Length: 160
Image (cartoon, rainbow, N blue to C red; front, side, top):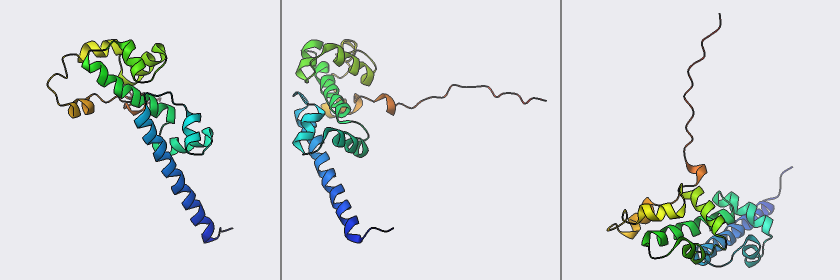
């Protein structure tokens, strides 16, 4: 059974409204990453339920709002660690994380090394490099974005 044209238009209008609200959530995360944010607070700000926001955000951006928030925090932490004038603990709290353990675990997942090792390694590496280039070169890569290499298997000989 076909829906009337006005039904499709309403659905399309609702979809566009949802996308606008999702952009507002993403922009808020980008702006307020260092503040205490959770999915319930973000959802309340755009008059959505937390579950609906999480599902729609994942469909639109390929990751959950929490994952997006943590990625923003880790990107900012990387910049602060490259500066070298703050300790890892100070950076953790400066970017809005309340647990050093969670911060270190997430940082290691995204960057591939603990924050203290990153700070030591990048202390002089980025010296003299424009910040826009440094940001692009050092951007964290999510584990799901890393290409998976298949193990090399020898062909199985045919049985006779």
